[in-house]
Figure 1 (cartoon, rainbow, N blue to C red):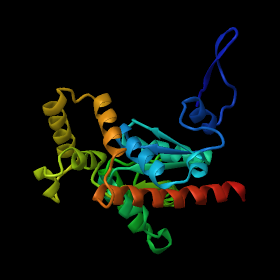
Figure 2: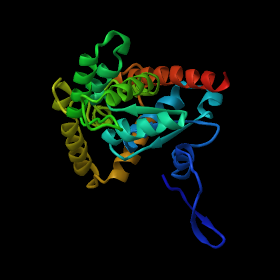
Figure 3: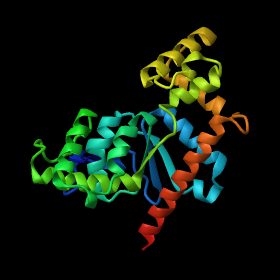
Length: 251
């Protein structure tokens, strides 16, 4: 691990950096706040609006919501391991299509045999999540890393109640869209549907336009609807994790 810093004489490496300091330099970790890392910008908008609508200001001021934009596989593999080692005050918010991963880390490792754990590690590999530190499923080191990974994810990872943020976006853009009535609809289908709707309406489906339009629509979510319920549930889940992390840091 190398952290490069600008000095009066030029760029120089910091001696003996910690992983926490590296993440601070990358802008992910803000001291004295809990960082909520989201899978992408749309999920950042959804999370920020959920917090804004359901939390009191003193609690809102304790968190910093940031879009990781590195891919969910990277978040659940390398980033989890780095945050675990650095003891970072980080919470991750992921799309609902990661439920198969959640089904694995929500299990109790004490009730799993080594065979069960190796099978779970293999399944994670199929889901593009890799236990950092070992390439071999049969390696006992991988099993140890898996147990640490499970414990961290249970406390720090929240999955939204929709396939993806684009499903929520499409609900606001076009509530009668046929895709919303298809239980088997996938993440990619919702992404394409949102882009098509935006092209029809304004001729622009760029990432920045998606973010701005979604943010606007989320700010005017009608009461009593499915989107408001989703935001409320997300806010409740995150509040519990934030309060738990703050209690741990004060202990």
